[in-house]
Every structure is written in C-alpha cells, then in structure tokens.
Image (tube, rainbow, N blue to C red; front, side, top):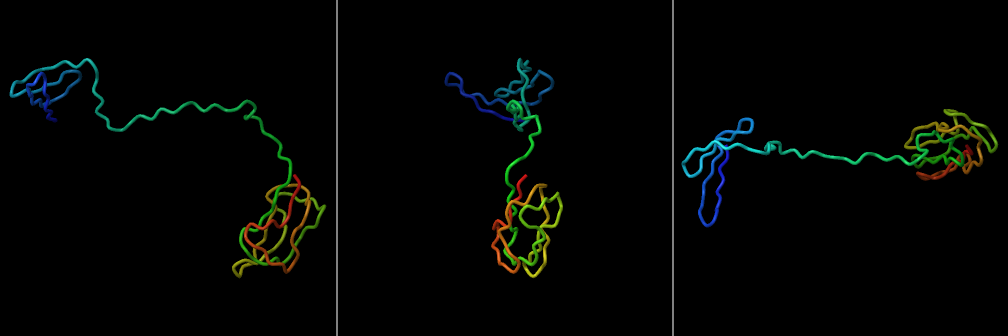
Length: 140
C-alpha cells in the first residue's frame, strides 16, 4: 500500500503498510512482518468535511413587510421613447403598459413591475435616453 521511512533515535526504519482491515494493520518493518492494532480509525478520505455555522436570522425577519416608497423605472438599454401611456397621478397595476421605446432597431414595451401611483414622468415622446436613465417614478 504505502512505504514510509522513519528515523527513531538515530536508527532508520523502512515501514511498509501491507494491508489495513478494521483496526488491524499488517506492516513490514525492515523486512519483518507485524500485526498492529490501531486505536484510532484512519481517515482514508482526502475530501475535507465542511462544517458551517448555523444561520442566525435577525428578529422579525420572518414577517412579510409591506413595501413603501418610490420605485424608479429605468431604461434597460439606450434608445428613443416612442409612446408614453401614463401621466403623473395615474394608478398602475403590475404588468400595465407604461411606455414603448425603441432600442437596437426594436420596439420594446416597458410594463410596471410594481403597483402604485405614477409620481413623475421624466421623459417625453421622441426623446433619446441612455441606459439606466430614470424614465418615471412610481409611488408604492
């Protein structure tokens, strides 16, 4: 199986492990065979065992919190605003059409991700916008 070289008190020993079954190892030391009883089991796996700390959640994290505040609708790509469907003060639901814009020679419809009231519209039809530009704000 494996061969080891040990130096004990100045004397060199060549130890070869012949077999290992349960807690008995058959070894050869400088040509002499011995049966050795092992007190501790040998770990033959080279894969380390990962031990992770338990996850500690802050108090109240299991409760669902109602979202409030302002949701900013941003341009996913640079392009031109073709048509705006909403105006300030309009109430919108999830998946309502907000506007159509052209990007990369394709017309894209932006839909509402959140329900709320349109607080402000920052663009007009025909206007060019850059990526991540705020197009409108929805108050939740």
